[in-house]
Amino acid sequence: MLNIALPKGRLGENVYSLFEKAGFECPEVTEKSRKLIFENAEKGIRYFWVKPSDVAIYVERGAADIGVAGKDILLEYEPDVYELFDLNIGNCNMAVASIAGFRDNPQKTLRVATKFSNIAKRYYSSIGRDIDIIHLNGSIELAPLLNLSDVIVDIVETGSTLKANNLKVINTIFPISARLIANKSSYKFNDTVINELVSRLAKQQ
Image 1: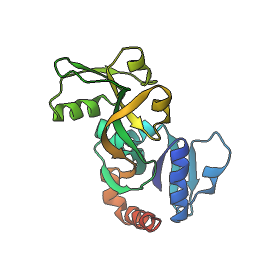
Image 2: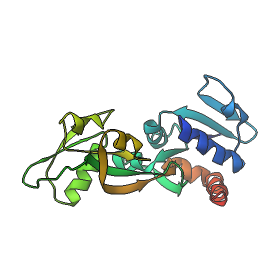
Image 3: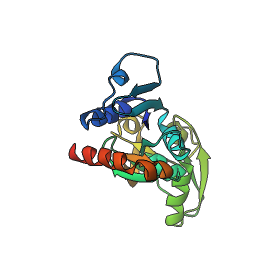
C-alpha cells in the first residue's frame, strides 16, 4: 500500500485531480465526509489529508511514502526527503513587502515580520543586511501597519491583500509551486511505482 499525504484545502483538491487523471484514483476522496484516510485496495494506494505545513513531516518520518508540499515549506524546514517533481500548481512567490513609500535605512537594523524565519534569515544574510526577525503566525500584513516591523516576508499570490492594506512588493525572493516529495527509504523500496506515478504526472503537463 502506497501512502500519500495530501495538503488539506484547495491545493490538495487540485493535486488529487492530477493524481486521479494519472490513473491513481480513489473515489472516496471526493465524497463529502469527515474521514481523513481513504483507500483504494485495488490500486494499492492510501490517501490522507494533513495540514499543508505538516506534509513534509509525515513524509520525512515515513508515515507517508510520498506527499505534496510547497517549495516554501521545503526551503523553510529543509526536511530530509527527495524532491521528485514540480507539479507546477499552487504558483505564487515568496516576497518582501512594505508600506508604500518605505525607504530602507541601511544604518539601522531592519525589522522583518514573517512566519518564514529561516527563509528570511538566509535571504538577508545573502545580501549582508542586519535584521531583527519578528516571528508571527498569522496576519503578517498588520505588522508594518502598526509599526511592529519595517517589512514583511510572506507568500504573495495575487497581491490583492497587500494592495488592500497599502502594502507593495519591493523584492521577490523566489517562485513557489507544489512539489512531489518522497521518503528516502520508501523510494528505495517503491521506486518502480513512484517513478511510474511521476511519469504519468509529467504527461499531464
